[in-house]
Length: 58
Image (cartoon, helix red, strand yellow):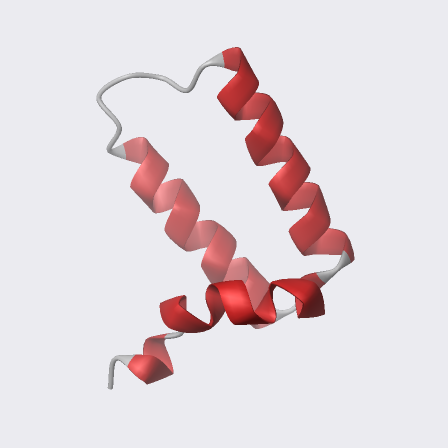
């Protein structure tokens, strides 16, 4: 996994820690599926994660 993918995953984890309620079992399963896709096909997620790139905010 590359640095950009690591940063995206970290951003999601930080957002999840502030949730008032826990994720449901189906939400956890969907999250696992997305994480697996991001890990195995990071280029396919490039357009989806571009808006989270910190260079876009500077």
